[in-house]
Image 1 (cartoon, rainbow, N blue to C red):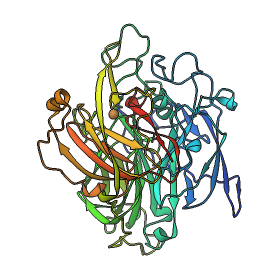
Image 2 (cartoon, rainbow, N blue to C red; image 1 turned 90 degrees about the vertical axis):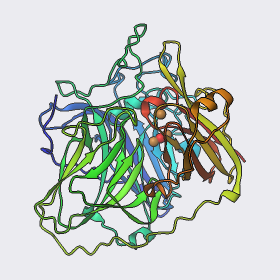
Image 3 (cartoon, helix red, strand yellow; image 1 turned 90 degrees about the horizontal axis):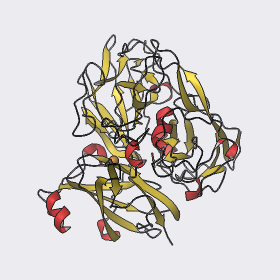
Image 4 (cartoon, rainbow, N blue to C red; image 1 turned 135 degrees about the vertical axis):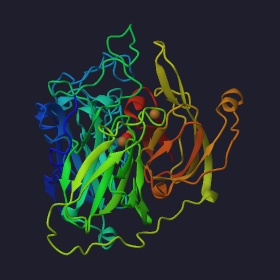
Length: 511
Ligand code: C2O
Ligand code: CU
């Protein structure tokens, strides 16, 4: 089914209002529900899940350092919207089907409030997972200004819960960002990009089986999900009317598996000002921007003097990345449309500053530990592709246990054919380099035989990151300092079909 493009306007999620706010803390309540929402005018309303009756959920806006308490509540029905594979870790038949837990992606947060995958809870907190610690989460927001997002993280069904709609933006602001005079207010817009597939009746489709079905199982997880329709902020191929002036867009890839390589069909530059973890040293003018699942980029697009023009945001990243098919330019090769049709309401005094904020480099001399971690795939008992971190499943004993305050370098040694967006909770890291190596020699002799020079990160990645593309047949090196909390966190691939099975590991920060 091919839906018409650019017939619905881009929705902008509302800003969530706190229940309580005083000089000490801010308190929010957020409830997850099932409801029907129009995702495209040619479709019947789709049944989705969302936070506060919205997909995407409302945007949570906080100040750096603000003490925020959030009570996340599950008021979802008992039956899941999508087929559950009960062979997947954490999703066996001994637990209720509908479980949720919320993670603020990129947050600097105590572990008990981080949304540990086994800290799930059901409606009314009737059943809770083994690591559930509290009903009200506490966020200290020690990050600098940045674009974060919140989403479900339940062990074994994260891919299904996020696909159902459980995701929203979480923005951290601060004065040093305000003083930069970036486009703001109506001219600052978050864009959550996702792919979906629909059934004829307008319901969301999620496969019961991979392309090559597993006959022993009624439902089996698939190694990837690639949708045939692109949505932004919960609308299929929307358009946005803009004024001829500068806008700041907060781009987020919230898709299950799909990567995007974003361009504007006008050929004009986008000025990237921030990465996952906040502002860059200085803006970079770029023609295209790569976004793996969970990666963010803040860009300024200048529509000045483009009155009357329609500009399409396009995507040409193969899916799955990088081995898959190139997207059809007439469908998933398009994301959304900007229409420069609104009159200029006031003079555009916002700026693209020449310099933004210095990003201090983490020094390699301060490193106390180097870890070599393989990204590998193997086969499970049903002959399915089973992707792991360092050959270990989720339940294996913790092997990464950095000391509080320690700086480490992790070598992500990817021997698979996929690019995996690797995400660490709690901390931001910097990418040191990527380097090709010989996979056969590594598999046989366990030595890294480099076949090319170390390549620095792309300009668009030279800031604080919490998710990095670890490309096939490359060693990707990242450096980070662990803190400011101790406790139980996780690191994982952010392809949701991979993290559910079981490209995800706990890690612990110790004293
Ligand atoms: Cu976006 Cu572990 O999360
Ligand atoms: Cu992966």
